[in-house]
Image 1 (cartoon, rainbow, N blue to C red):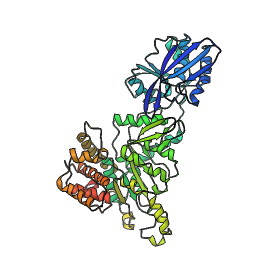
Image 2: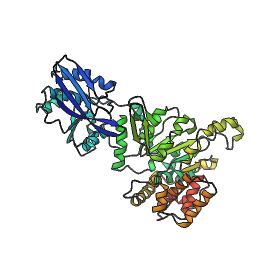
Image 3: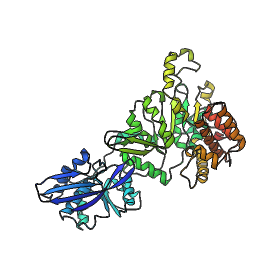
Image 4: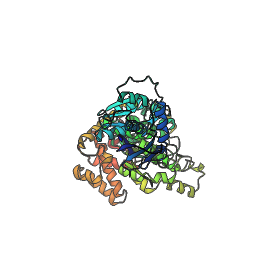
Length: 524
């Protein structure tokens, strides 16, 4: 017998798996046990061909491959290398002494070359937790594994390469294996098109720019509604430019999700900027939420973790997709349950919704007399965004049409994204200091009860929020979100504790009221 180690992923969490191989007398058969899926069951043929084509001998006896724990479902082709090395060790082709503290990951081609696999980063983290000293991965995945920094990473090009190192023989000169990238998924997280976007490009719309800036400073969700062509999409696409860089812990969370999805860039896997995803309104439910058959993949909600998820034309999305936002907006995670397995992915994103007043977009505008939508059509269109979902959105803002004079005015005197981003970063620093030692990082994450108990506002500020609650202008949930907004306004102004001015500003943001007072300082 011989044993090697690999890993099984449930969401972004890795579980140690022991690959056991027993070679016994009997007919030359290969049996894989331990709840393998179809791709893992096919590993028998891949591994046998890879061993043979690597000029090693596959045992001509009964080979039993066990994956322990047997009760844990196993998915994927990354077990190939661990299986092949365990078979060779059981056949005394490689020494067993070096296997007990090493984890093996990689898919074998029939000629013995090692192909890249998804999920290497969370697998390396699981290897560290399991006490492994080294991890063997395909060469294309090595930069990803090295991000962990607490384990020795061995980059291999082929099975021959791994066997030669284990046997202390000369390393063969195998050619590099090109990476396989999911180009469609990678394009979702493409950020190059956002680098040149600046808030100065937005003419007018001071209230919209204030709303987006406050949301960026406190990690709040935003709902922008108004007629077509007034700047809703422009504001949303410029919001990521206001967010600070990810710290190491946040970056590791984001990279773990992208690694499992198989879209982490091979050449530069280190993620610095918050992700931005804007799926089309025709995207399917699994594409946005996550899911699949036996292999559960993260969706746009999880891929946007620690970043921005922008749903343009929100009422055009499938209602099931919109209703699925409820839990992630509250808990910051997505739980996907299937008959064979359950996967949990982080989903602490900032949601930006954009919607027209009606399907044709003219209702409530200066050209409302040209609106062709009936009252039934308008109601059905608006009902696609349910009250429970909208109640979870912190900032509501109507983006109105501008006059000809506003459209032609110069934007040279507008504050650019760099200046706004510096103010946002200072506000985030104040939040980081205030919540140091707690599980929260931004105002939007802190439960309302904690804010009221440990970080109370001034009495007059509480009175304003309680008055709005008593008059049913806000729900109890919305009242908590108003308190969070008040703290964000205070952080932007450099105020130690929210007072009546900050509470009034928060109510203006929440209730879509005309903006005045301290909020105008945000973009001054």
